[in-house]
Image 1 (cartoon, rainbow, N blue to C red):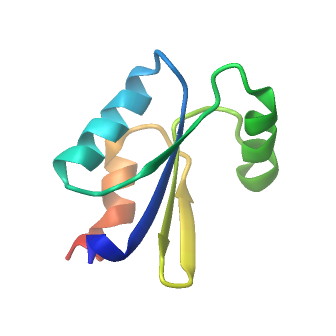
Image 2: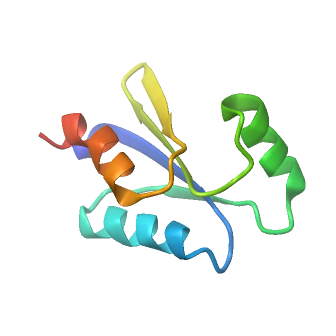
Length: 87
């Protein structure tokens, strides 16, 4: 199931929460792309438009035609969002 996922991690340099998310995804063998918002306020503008947040990490998860974003900080939120796809 995880092979069908499209995962994008919006992050910035030096963000411990962002690194935690990336490490977890790597441990779960989930491939992901990264959008680095460091020095790119225009990327934060996109997050604000899409999800009403300017903070990172934000994890976008796509499976089939369904997409969702995890905007809450903390691995428990990411794990809950990924659980149905990892079964």
